[in-house]
Length: 464
Ligand code: ADP
Image 1: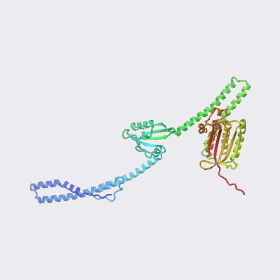
Image 2: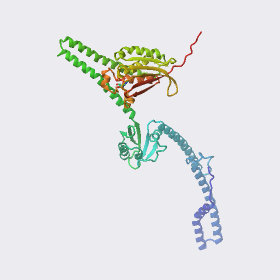
Image 3: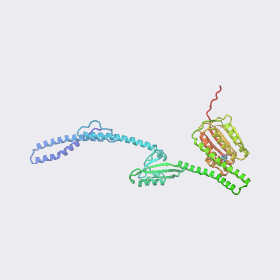
Image 4: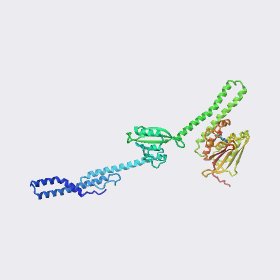
């Protein structure tokens, strides 16, 4: 607390102010000869001295009170030491008590404020408050990251968010105190869809109004929605075609071909093909959903690839032979085992070799090689490549081949009994195994589908 100081000039001024009427009276009495000049002067000096003393004492008390009140201001050293003396003591003590209460309230408010700031900063979506002049008052960490700015306070929202729908909503929130929500697109390299929520914060719309703006990135959610919609549409379409064929065949058997045993045998064969096609589709859909379900759990089995690849060649030998094709399996002699699930790896290589049989030129060989390699992150791996001599795949199709139901030539795929899910299954099996799939294709030359799988840890063989 600063020391209370009383200025002499103030004391003199106060003393003169109080004494002046009495001095005037003394002068009048002297003029009417009721008092002698000597007595009047003596009384005047006496009064001046007494008033000066009283003024000094009152001013000292006030100065001390002033110093104590200053001690209550935020930022001043808290509290007032000692019992306050004099007639102002009680006021001073009451102020002191009030000051302590304020100080503790201020501390509680400051703690609450920093708690709220931390809470708002931890909020994963951009959150801003905007003033009546459309300038940003506060912004959380997500907002700063979203707009890639270290500081947003004071900037006009219109210069940052170029979306008339959202700006209009903010304007209505400020002018009319209405809350609302709007979805809009931001035209960037890849279109982004955002949801803007606006809530008025100040009670009265207009000059002092401010609103809360919450932005939510809906791009991923909308993409998933779109994928789900496309997936259902694709599955329905894939099932509808064989179903319509079956209905038509049954109608023909019931009608024009009734009693025709030759047609009956032919149509039954065709119906069998359609049913097999639907069964393959359902089978692939179930496989895909099973693999996706445990994609987050890496399989822990130990799989020797050389016998597995020979087994795949055996399984598909007959259908390769139908197209005068040979499956050559050539694993390197020092091949390490991989960490994986044998059934899923079998399915993976069956799909790749089956595609080679379907899409490569009849009479050409299919080469399956396996050798040591390293993954992108340096882990030891085994690289299995299935190479064919086919028409190859144009560059623009390659990134999309593993999408469900994506086909370069849908007619050809259906004719070959394809479901359009083979490579999607391959992609998910590889991802579950924490491996990599690399597709290299040259139009007119052929394609190489290479899979890198993490090698299993070497286990020491004990010889007794
Ligand atoms: P599908 O059941 O149609 O074979 P996939 O998912 O296995 O479905 O393959 C998707 C598409 O990729 C095929 O329709 C085909 O156009 C193309 N494709 C796959 N493998 C090969 C390959 N070895 N050579 C040429 N094109 C291929």
